[in-house]
Length: 338
Image (cartoon, rainbow, N blue to C red):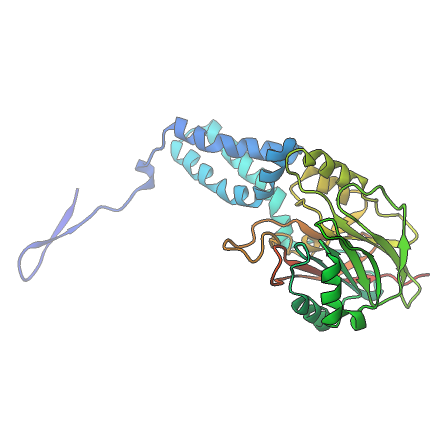
């Protein structure tokens, strides 16, 4: 009932009664309709059930699903139904546990070794701004640059912009297509053939010896995207990537994996002796694709995976004009050779 108050000038002021959430009730059917798709998403993500092209693509949106799952929690609470509320809370918790650790990071082993920096960039058929990429190299002085979609023309443009002086050593498999790839380095490189079965685009591998004597292997990763019939090859390509060795040379995988940490195959790869530089530093939710579009970047498919014996000190993501991928840079600490 409204409360009225007399005023000196005549008339009354009507004061509405306070809003009471206890009087709000949502139908149980509506709550179930809201919860069900998120619950199915949580089951698929936790159990790694993203089979086929469609599910492999939409599972990358899990961080957004985790945020959206809070709405069904609210609706289920307002429904006063215990069962749907329990399902909604469990769903939101499962999605949150899957996503939130990427925003908080984790500790890495104290390597106490030499600094080593890796930069990776997909050049979009060689259309990336060569000058901007070389300026990024000048600014951060990475030891290795891993490139995908590297064309012969892009190699010439990068060298003309000064990369030849900054990184004279290289193992290149450039092509006039998305298949081209190449590793550039400020240290002498030795090409590694037969390290693993390449399934997808060109994925050159190289080894270098650091000034302290540590041997380090770099793999330039560029799997096929999980589109249509290529999904089978995408899965096979991730499975074929080499595991991190328990001893001997250190190993780093850097590039465009066409996979996020919400893909079961990507998590299985990491479980084979790696950690993700973005994830381990609390920056694993920074999206890398699509860049330079009308919509902001949405998903994270570019990664630097490092041997767990290597400590990750810092990780950052950078925009490069002309390409649809953001560049990723990881500053590492590599134990000295004994």
